[in-house]
Length: 62
Image (cartoon, rainbow, N blue to C red; front, top):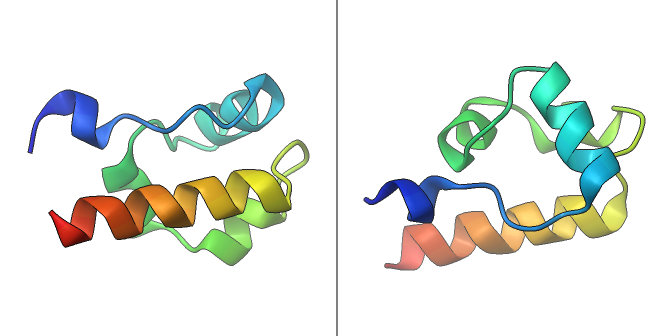
C-alpha cells in the first residue's frame, strides 16, 4: 500500500489535531486503535468517525 493510501482522509482540522495529539496519524494507526476511543476525543465527531470508517473499508476492499 502506498503512503497516500494510508494517509488520513480529510476529516477537518479539529479532528486531525485531536488524532495527531493521540498519536494517530495514518490509517494504520486507526486500525490499531478503537474508533470508540477516537470518538471520545474532543474534536472528533460522528462525521470524522464515518469518514475514517469509510476510508478503512475502502483500503480493505482494494
